Every structure is written in C-alpha cells, then in structure tokens.
Amino acid sequence: MTSLLETYVESDALGLAALVHRGEVSPVEVAETAITVIEQVNPKLNAVIHRLYDMGRAMAAKVDRKAAFAGVPFLAKELASSWEGAPLTNSSRYLKDLVAESDSVSVQRIRAAGLVLLGKSNAPENGWSISTEPKLYGATINPWKEGITAGGSSGGTAAAVASRMVPIGEASDGAGSIRVPASCCGIVGLKPSRGRVTLAPAGDFWYGGAYFLCHSRSVRDTAAYLDAVAGALPGDPYTPPRPAQSWLELSKRAPARLRIGYTITPANGTPIDPQVKATVLATAKVLEGLGHVVEEHDMALDGNDAWKTYTHMSPVETAAMFDGLAGVIGRPVTRDDVEPVTWAVIERGRSISGVEHARDVWKLRELSRAIAEDLAPYDIFITPTLTQLPRPMGYYDMSMTDLDQYNARWTDAVFAFPFNLSGLPAISLPLGSTPDSIPIGVQLVGRYGDEASVLAVSTQLEQAMPWKDRRPAISA
Image (cartoon, rainbow, N blue to C red; front, side, top):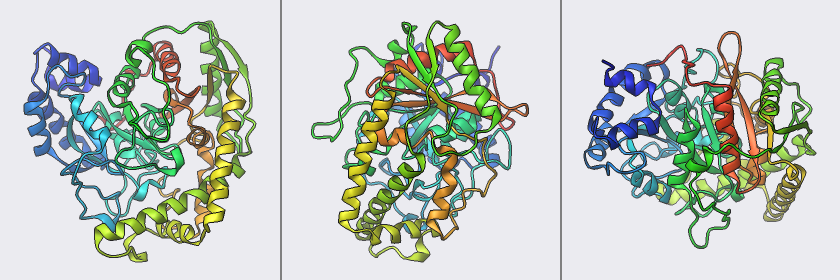
C-alpha cells in the first residue's frame, strides 16, 4: 500500500487537492507530511528560510475542503508580497525584523484557493540577482547539482518545488526571476501578462515590469493557480482581457494549427551554449510534428541598448522604495544595511534626474510596442530561457561595487527581460537536460493577454517531451 509520504512526493498540487476533495486525507495530514519532507530535505538546500509551521497547521485545520487547492502545502517568496504575521525582509539586513501587518490582495486569493502556508522561500536581497545567495540567509543549493546556481530571484521556491518539498510556491519576476530559476531547477515557471495579477495594495513595480505568479511541476497546476489569483482591481494601470473559460480548461484543449516562430540567436550578440541551442531546435521540431507551422525569426531588438535603458530606470524605483521604508524602519538606510550591489543601485537611483527618468520610461514604452509588433505574426514565439547552462555559485556576485559591471553579467537572460518590458506572457518549460542531468529550459512567449495559447501548447509539449519522472539528486 502506498504511503501518504510516497503519494505526496509523486503528486502535483491538484493531485493532492483531489485527495482532500475525496476525503481520502485531511489537510492536517498533508501539512504534517510536508513538514516532515521539508525537515528532511531543506538542510541540504537552504530553500526555506522561514519555517511557519504553526501558521500552516492553523490554516490546515480550517481550510475550505472544496477549494481548488484545498490543503496543498505552499511557500511564499521572501520578497515584496505581504502575508500577515509572516516576515517581510526582502532578504535584507535593513528589514530583518519587519513582519507583515496585512495581506496583499494576491495573498487573500491564495488563502481563498485553499493553499496552506508552511514557510517562506529564499531570495536574493531585493530580488536583484538571477541567483539566490543573500548574505542574510545564505545561498540556496541547486538540487540537481551542488556548485551551480538554482537561479533567482525565485531560487528558493524553485529548489523547493523541484526537490518535492512542496508541489507549488510563489514566484515573482522583474527580469526573468520566475523563468530563470524554473530553467535552472527543471520546473514550470509562467510570467503572466502585464497586469494579470493585481499588485494591490502596491501601486506598481517598475512600470509594469514586475510580475507575480508561481513555480510548479505541472502545466495544469500553473493554469489552476492563474485561475485562483488573476484579476485586476478597478483603477489598476493595466487590465489584460480575461477569457470566458478557466485557464485550466483552456490548457487541456489541443490548439488549432498555430504559427510559431523561434530563435536561437541572442539579441545581444553573445554566444549560446550548443546544448541549449539543440534543445530549442528539438522543441521546434516537435511542434512542427504536432502540425504547427514553425519558422525561424530573430528578434528585431538591440538587447544591449534595451538592457541599458531598463537598468537605468529601475534604480530610481529602488531608491524611492528604500527612502519610503525609512518611515517604517525608523531611520534611513545606510551602506552597512545592504549588500554592495543594492547600495550601488540606491546611489545610482538618487543620482538620476526626473527628466532622465521620464526619458527612460518613454523609451521603455517604445520598446514594449516594438517587441510586441515584431512578434505579432506569431501565435507563439520560442526562445532559450537562458543562453547558457546554470552558472557557478558566486558568478552573480552582489558584493561587487561596480553596478555596470554587475549588470553586464546578466547577458545569459537576454531572452527573459524583453518580455518584462513588453508585458507579453512567457513560460519556461524543462524540455531538455545535459548528459549529467542539468535542466535546460525553453521559453514560450504568447500575445498579450493570451496565456491560454501558451498553456495549451505547454500541455502539448508536456505530453510530447515529458519531464514528470525526472528527479534531482537532492529530493524527497
């Protein structure tokens, strides 16, 4: 007879919820199983940096057993989103004692969906890294291979989901931070359309450049999570159209013959790893075999120039955020409160004039339209998620003091940040791996507001190029 522990580590989130719906297990039993797994696996990975077991047990005891994710264990990311009673430190010494006083709207929806919070996942300070190595909490280990990055900034969630500690967890993305760790850890990571999930009570992050959703191990879990948390509020700056049917239902429907573009040419002129290139080409071939029209198309984008503009806009936002936090903490932030890269970002932001900032925003809006227009002929556009395999730990070094030199290290993510600028939905799927089992992600991009097509094609690929049975070296 299969034990609950075995069932837990083999099931996706909807699979566990189905057990609760049928009354075969209780949410409390599932929570205790998850706690056991976290206690066994997390010491090897450092993915869960706040264990909130008592909060989770209390939630599990009174969860709505008919909810979509009834009793499913969940991790919130230690960055930006607010969960009442949980730490809200952004992995920064400056905020190390801060505790959230209320729920953000997305967290209210997470609770209503029946998800049970058991902890918070590791993230780099302020999210400004595509690796997860904060000085405050220490580095998260990639469960596939020690010594390489788990990705960032949602690296803690990615490692926890990949290693079976939880089936689903919160992730967010300002320049690839959902998709990059999904690629590094061999899981599913969707960055939705701009405005798809309200940021309330926050106004906006990076002029629509930051997004919240999840990491999971199955396309259907991601689709169901999108159903649970999506929706703008009156007055939100971006309001993408929503389909009449659920994304979960739409994800199950084989799409009609689509026009699909792909590229293996980085828009910043940097090299691409041959194994990454081969995985993208293999994906294109599979889609062609499924009846889609597939053609190569290189993006009409100067990736270096676009990145320079984006990283000249974002420091102003960061400086303003830290200035606002002074009233919460009771004193202004100092150099000693944050990591060197963060301090360099704050100083850069303070040095940029309002006129310069307005010009950056203007240019980003132009880039947004240009990217969307360039890819408009395609229902789906395919790229590498990362142009290189996961880098060694320490490569994205937040102790660097030269901000321009640090930002230049992000060239591997040249196919990620353009879709933060443009607002187009983009998902990373674990469609390849190296001979020594290092995951390789492939990115699928859709038209604005059309997560349905992205999810439907993702389901086709999940069936044609399955990853369900792949297990990392460090796993429950």
